[in-house]
Image (cartoon, rainbow, N blue to C red; front, side, top):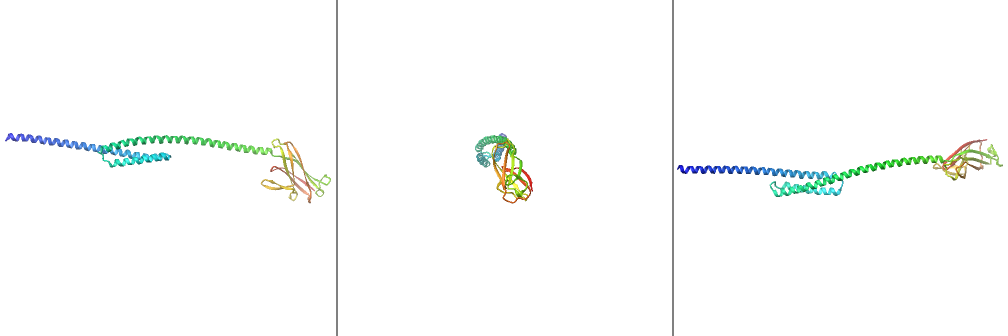
Length: 288
């Protein structure tokens, strides 16, 4: 009996030991499989994070550049990245074939976004250089404009000075009442003609040529002895006599006459000489 029981016990112990070893092996394998599953999930999560980061970078890059063509390309790549992210979220972590494919796609996306980063950086540097150059050119243009304005102001001032220097001047103005024998008298009641004489002063800056001089005589009552009218300071005023004279820059005498055909009262008469829009001389005379 003992001979039978002892072998059975041994066999039973061996079976129990085998079962224990098998259980231990299965438990270890289960743990290994669980660890691999966790690693696969972590790997998948890292891939998802990277795809999400790429999609975010595409959105950010589109705000950094003002180029419709490149923005369209970035939008296209962003949509492709979002589609791959969607596929990754739906695939199982233990689907080795799909995970491997999506890893390859991720590497391609990484290379593409790196190329766009470099391109946009280059374009931004170019734009900065162009902006700096534009600022420099604008500064030069503004400086040139200021210089031109300064020259224009100087030219205008110089022109005004030249115009003032070239302005004619009437000197030695005289007014005489002449009787019928062309003799000077002091009484207005016997006067038949008024003679106004003056000299155009020497002026080497004035242009040579024929000049028209207007003589205006105002009576004691303020009336102008009229012989016509001429433009003066944006209006028309009366003159008594006018005369065209050849002027060559040297002192030039001028004499004009006005035939009296109305009553002249005694008192102070005002004689003014005009030429080229300017009053070039004036003097008063008193008659009895």
